[in-house]
Length: 385
Image (cartoon, rainbow, N blue to C red; front, side, top):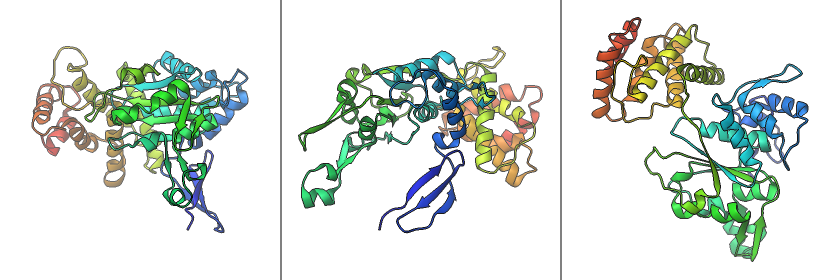
């Protein structure tokens, strides 16, 4: 029985499932792809974009950068920022995709590598779904191609029996492919990308053929070297990429802004009410994470120990979103210290032995003595140290 296809309705966050001889049934998706969630902004940019576009690009490099960084168009359309950070980083990333160099987004966990990758592909190609998810078990077929074994056994090797990978599809269609967590992929599988990126060709020796990339093809990979299970990139493969490092937010204000924006977006998708004065608790979470991450308090007076986790912006977003859900479903809708205390404890204490000591010391030497933080101190003590 054929599997129904999912057809996205741009900008709606709603998709329709259709199959042969079946009526359309409308279903909402929890997280629309970027090209659907921001279809209106992409359409407005395309209409206002009169600058040169590389082959098969939906937007010019200027418009792609504007889509990521935000801005106002001549017709009054406001483009919301997708990435809050140095403009030059985005410009270098976009420019790289306009050349024959692949792009490697590198950074510690939680620096929005996947988020930026998805939005770049959506703006450049109008499709962010040509994705290879890197894991320790990612096979070579996920990067190159596989086979429909029923057809292979019945008729032998043929193009009809070949199952193209997302990378092969991007090559033949002149689109942007994505490889997430490249350093989690085994080294021998990583190196299958070398010929693709250098020669822009994917050999199919079983058929005595090859797939050559058409103009518009490029590849975005993401990687970090902080997690376990990392496989170093070979020097040959690394040379095929232009590496752009995504940093952690430079200032507390920038990090608070990022967390507030993403929490608002996530809250809408989860039908959570907006929390009055929630920014105060967001600022508290960001302060705790930055101080533990940097090993020093904001005023620079007290040195503190750092836990084993990264305490990234993404984890701060998760803590605040969880607290917002607690406030909505089990409280009065106002985000309070008691709503975020358990989430912070879970984010900080990854190693039950060492991290628990770090957290307790931080509570007693910093949080307990800080003006206006008594309620937060009590909430943290209640969830346990």
